[in-house]
Image (cartoon, rainbow, N blue to C red; front, top):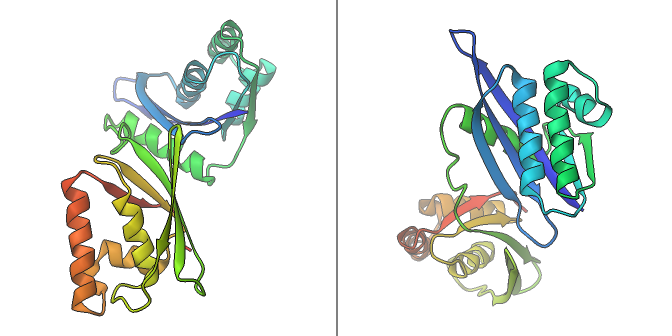
Length: 246
């Protein structure tokens, strides 16, 4: 099942017209989440959010089922039950016509904005409304999972790209000046491709803190190694983003 998380942002202008932004996160099996956004002229926030729903239908694979999640009950009522005013009704019919023309079974449901992908969709919509592209939106990404058990001297580092998964078993040196968790993080960074954004999951708080501020390392040798790794990553255009800590 394919999933899309959509949100919108809207602002009324002094002349009475409105400018909006839409954002969505598209999740397809076996692929990294795709992030999309756009700006539009819209009479209200509901219209902007229905545009996000329409774009999700256009971007998802044809001939497959799609579940769309929103925190907007009016949009759900318009698409799922045909309720709402004339303007919402027209947009909802456009959504259903697009889904039918692409051979898609469409479902729409509610999810709270506090969910991770909804927060991302909301940020995308806000950036689009303001006319700012979201940094890193069109860059290649790799989802990175670091698995390390304190009692073992080995960590498993997995990078998942579109259509590819790379797994490395990293031997950790307990005598190194660099903490084991930071050693595992550095191994992940070394596996990155030039210009890639690494979305790091389950990095330890220590590893994240040392990557962001190498001067926090207790020993000069550790500081030097971390600083060198950051400089090498920057030189090749690699960005590191932390999505959670272990």
